[in-house]
Length: 471
Image 1 (cartoon, rainbow, N blue to C red):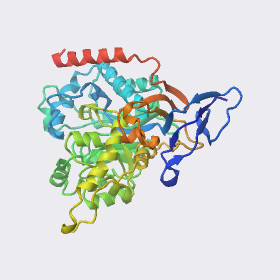
Image 2: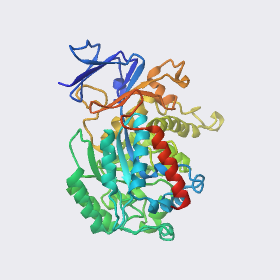
Image 3: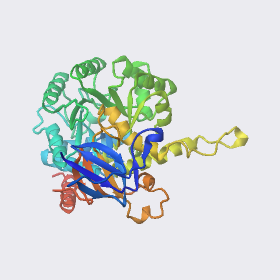
Image 4: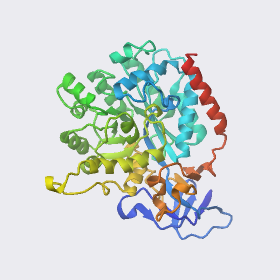
């Protein structure tokens, strides 16, 4: 039996709700990749012991929305001050045709390493780099890189059977796929990579880029039916800006969420990224159907889109998770930065609603709108729920040992009265003493085996230089 003991933890955040959000520990035993016991534990004869006396334990983060290819598109001057639609034209659409297999692999590796170093063990990547006759397989590259690093990987296989005008006018525009071509590739990917088990390391998801723009309504209905027949979940972008509302009304005479309901794109097997601009009826509909959200606070803030109404969504019954989104609209594409932003922005959203007492106001601010425990839950077990990974239900006995140990040895964490909350409230990047995915060590003493960060940085700088020169 493969067993080890994590001993003398300062604190344990479980990712579970309510009174279960913390465990006194101070020890965690892992046997054959599963959490076997938590409490005051004695080491077994010959058992490996990890001294965690200076650490706090979190479940490994579950990132439910990313665009890994954008890891080489950070801080593009043409897009840095643009809102969503002009940013799409300025950055991801302008550069995407320049990606060959080598450049795409490098971008994926950078993004995965960045996430891994923040304590993220599961990545759902919304990859939309596909076009007819493509000379390399981006899906295979992503699974290879994730496997090399020991990460759980969910491929949200994007597609577009039609383009927006802003894409068609770009010199680097890529041709749209056919519905038949997309569905054929989804069958291939499902047979080759998809593991529906509760402790899966590899999943595949149907993920047209956005319902309002990427395909015709009848095609989206067919995609939803085909996905469910294959046992796959559905994912896309929705209601990131007011433009979605305008488009839905102009094209279909209804709200974006009502349009999705009409084409079979709501339900507990569906989750959307963003959901920033919603009316009360849309929130009720999302909650009634059990649809999920990948909340991306940093990208939404960076693009000036707004702050998603997470509390209202969760109260309505929406499954809440956290996604980093692409690095081209989020220059710190890691889960510590994202959860720190989620904690702050929900409070700021509520505080923005405060009015003076003499005008009828009833409260001063929104500091109780999101607790650290809420954010940890959204970013871990919430993500597992959205992805349908039932064996990642937090740090409790019987669950997969996806565990991150943070050592809070940077001055930004000095003086904390409650070390358990440090990684979220203080932000930054705490020292990752160790991290396990399914009980397998993927980080030790803040280092990833086989990854030379200096070399990776040099490769990134050369790649950006080449992209800027047009070579």
